[in-house]
Image 1 (spheres, rainbow, N blue to C red):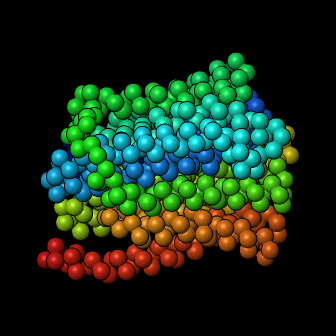
Image 2 (tube, rainbow, N blue to C red):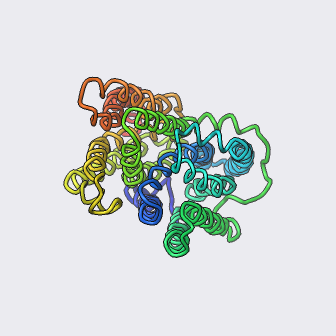
Length: 448
């Protein structure tokens, strides 16, 4: 069924984008959680710790891909909303080019300084060896990973969200099947988990390419519009997303340093488990934001502020509702979730359950902050979105890590994320109020 972002009811457009986006993100989070389960059982708790230590490396490449993909795709939707289809093609071509350049340079540097990078992560001994094994296999595939991520953003905004979902879903299934054989059956350990993830990225990229081969949208995989003249605009809009990922990497490095030096490896393992389970809630929030983004951008470009406001409200309600469900479920079942990954006899269940509970207390506010940041980004207001991203992603988390352990018992370092999301929500809601006040005149004019 064709999607008409200009005339279809907002709720219809939202659900047409929501289910594919949500399904894709949920499946992606499930395969990350499944990856962690296979590593936890096939390698051991140290494997979970090693994964936690390698997350910053993933975050850097994801940051590049998301900055270019979301920035370029948002601008494309705005241009298409104005009727400038050729400009949309130019944005796509230049987004793919700059992603290939950025990711290739970063991969080359990371491979050259791999040993130093592992040390920078704070890894030592056996955990360092596991982290090195994982990254040595994964790094060469990060160029393809970045390009596939950018393609998925444009395919979704090119009115084909279902294909992006199919690609993510099939890739996730392939990854889990390969994990079973490589990690458990063949006993390849961390390298087996990395090979499974790498091969799944090849599958995802091949499926996404079918959008252009079958000409299912307005975009072409060609050299039309190739160059760099649109790159500054793409990077400007995508900067908030870049900061979300980069500050997440910085936060994880800070967490790893504090946990290793003040508490020990058990805390790293608990943090690794929390990060891999928490990604489910985070990705659901991101999926909801992704469903809103093309509709907001298109109608912003088409000068339809009432429809922009309507989709924003729908996205905010969806994020809050799902976040509250997650928070309650984890509060009730945190020890059982920890035991599922660590084994019922593990002495780390209590510590991990505490970390999980505090993280999920922050999820409702996380949803609010992400949806508001997405509104600003989708309407080409990157400054506000960047402030929200920096606040929740690093600045207030760092403050929480420094302040909370001094004010409360040592376990309260886990409340740093809750502290950061709470303070950020105060700022994001105040910026939203100013935004709504500024554009209330436009809404009144359209209503009249």
